[in-house]
Image 1 (cartoon, rainbow, N blue to C red):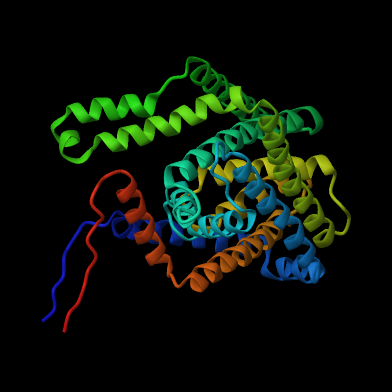
Image 2 (cartoon, rainbow, N blue to C red):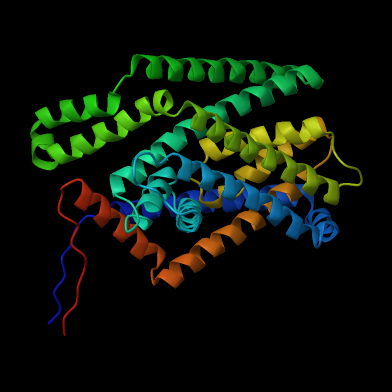
Length: 363
């Protein structure tokens, strides 16, 4: 007899949304590929040739420095080995690329995959600290990219106005973040406290969940005062992450164009890519939007459509690293669906909530 338990699964509800975004990205990708000319894109890829291995080598720097940054964010007695952190980081990144969940999927997955090495809350706290440094570095990098664009390139009136507006928005975000940090505003704990007073919150939110959230926020706000020297090193690693991205763009364009691009153009291109990664994280593999953004910049700065080929090469690089993440999953004996379920169960167990029942069959 077959027995099944029907339980709402957020990942299943998001599947139709993921399909819609994936189709949107695919259509956008096909449009820009057609606009640039498939022959020209193919020619650029042929010019790159074995240079793609160099692109992969440069991109590996980004994974290494982000992994090192995460390892440095652990405090106290708990320590995480680099190889364990690296595998978890690559798998988490792959989950973020393959699903519309973005950070909601990638960060908890990283923590869940190392919970046999360190406590789950400790891993989550370290990730939260690292993402705080990463977010600050992204904001500063985007800010510097906009300033570079405004000061070094002749721009159409509309593009200049858009850049000035973006500059104001980024400055406002950085200022808001600094105010939140200075005030030690525990907004997540405050939200939990309010929700627990409601009827729904009393039913589903447990005291252990609030305690875990408070522990994460305590780690974030106290990390700098206790680890100032380590903070400087983590920020330096984040700088290396962004510079490796700029180098990757510069090397790729040097292969696919007749002449190397200005280094500042590569810098602006990578800063635009950071914006795309932040805004369009929900689009699997950023299909279409990456090519659109890169094409927009190269058309305005380099007066050609090399941005389309750059986006295709970048997509191939992402696919290679995503394949490595899936390989790590297979070696662990898990599928992408299984790792989502394992992550959900690990978080539920840590937060004191019952694990979601899975569909089972008995014959």
